[in-house]
Image (tube, rainbow, N blue to C red; front, side):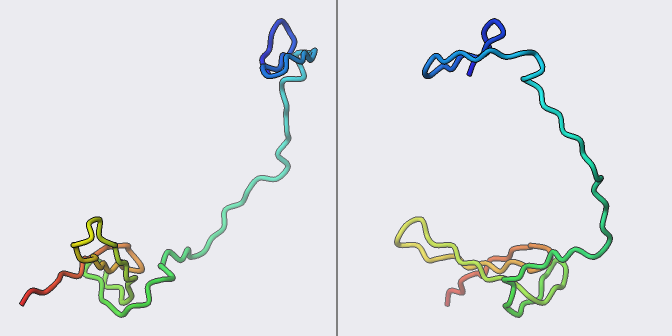
Length: 96
C-alpha cells in the first residue's frame, strides 16, 4: 500500500482505502518496567566434555571440533575449544 492524497492505494490490485491522519499511528502503553535480576550467568559450553587444561584460563574441559577438508586430499583439522573462555587450540599432526 502506498499513501496518495490521504488514501492508501494497493500497488498490486489498485484498491483504494480512505484513511484519516490518526489511522497511521499506533500507541501502546508499557504497564510494567523490566527488572534487573541478580545472579550468576553460566557461560560454560555444555558440549565441553573432553578433559583438557586451557592454556589461557586453566579450565579443565574442552569441546572437540573437527573441520572437514576443502580439498579431498587434505586431512581434517581437529580443534579443542575451551568450555569457559572459548580459546581454541589446534591439535597438530605429528610427523615422524
